[in-house]
Length: 225
Image (cartoon, rainbow, N blue to C red; front, side):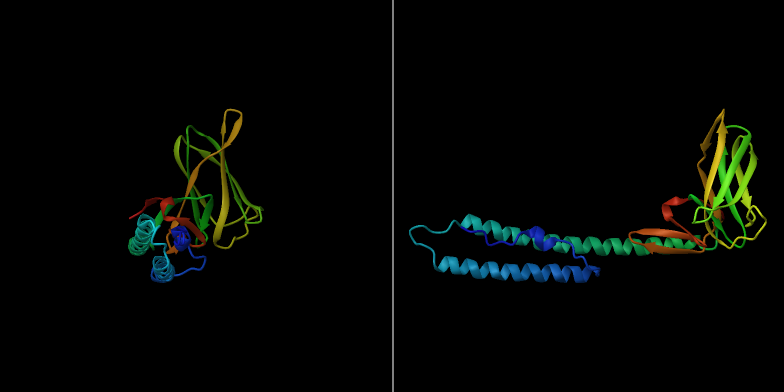
């Protein structure tokens, strides 16, 4: 018997256009119904015109009916999962909104300059000079500072001025922190601090805004009361 079933994978292929869970379900359900109706019409035609001496194998079309049922159930399951994810993300946005207006420390390669102030935190195994460079998006070095670090946790505060003393506008500036280990210079990991000014959804992730700096919620390291 020639297979009458449209491949379930083609029915379930994701749409390239953005849409809600309900619109995706409606589209998939419509496609499934159309193919199912065609299948039944062809099946009835074959049954009416089959050779009595060589009847059709009922196992084949029974198997195809089961496949249609499985696809229909999968459509319903996917829709329910999508709705659950949307509800969960909505709850996360509400929870993350409690960060707004509070000082936070985040992992980022950029310093957040807010109201002319920014701060970088880093750890060093021992005392020694640490170089901090602040750059524009074009790669121009705006500020080059050398601080004497102590063993353990250190903080460098930026007053929002470049190396010539000019005021730099608020924004998010690429930062590099490097220290000395023996005769070798190495880049040090660091975090930056600022005030959370907003929370937004970006794709499937939540982002926290520190002025112009945007980081994933997972990048938040600590929250001040």
